[in-house]
Length: 252
Image (tube, rainbow, N blue to C red):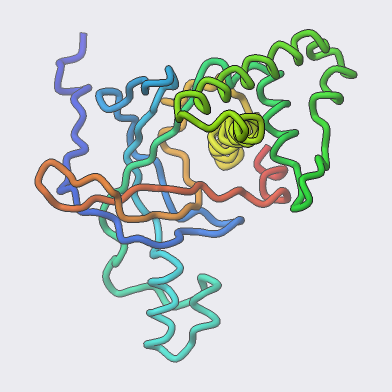
C-alpha cells in the first residue's frame, strides 16, 4: 500500500486572478481546466447541479497579444497568435469555471426542444425542428415531446404568476418565459458539448464532468461579481468558445 503522501494534492499556488480577456481561438485553445472543485460544487435552488472548476491560461489573451504587438508595431501578427513569445509569462493566475446541469436537461426530448427553440431567426421563425427529426428517427415519440412542452410551460407559468404579472399580460409573458427556459437549457448544455469537442470525445449530456479536468479550450474570462474570501476580486470563465467544425472532426 502506497503512503498517503503519494496521493496528496500538491497543486498549491497563490490564487491570483487571471486577467479578463479572450483566450485562444476556434482552432487553438488558450485555457486549461486544472481541477474539479468538488467542495464548491452543489445544487442550486432549482435543482440543477453547479459544477465548479479551476482554470488557468496556457497562453496570453488576445488582448494581451494585441497590446504586445502594438508595442512591437506588429498588431496583425500578434492578433493571429504569431508574435514573438513574451520574455516573461503575462498570463499567470486562475479563474473559476461553472457548469450548470439539471438531470431533466439530459433527456433527448428536452435537448431537442431546447435546440429547436434556439434555432429561431430574428423574425421568430424556427429554422430547424429537431423535435420532429428525433421523433422521425424513433428517439422518442410525440407523447414524450408533448409532456416536455407541458412541463416547461408549467415552469414558465409558475414564474410568471410568482412575479404578479397582470392578467392581461400573462399569456405573452408565459410564452416569453417558456422560450427563455428552453434557450437557457441550450446555452448551459452547449458549454458541455463544446468542452466535449475540445476534449475530443463524443458529445454526451451525461458525461462525468470530472473527466474534463485537463481539457484545453478557448473562452472568455471576466472579473467575478463575487468577492473572494480575502476581499479581492476573482475571475471567472463566462463563455466557452466553440471549436471549429473542421478541428472537432479531426479530434474525433
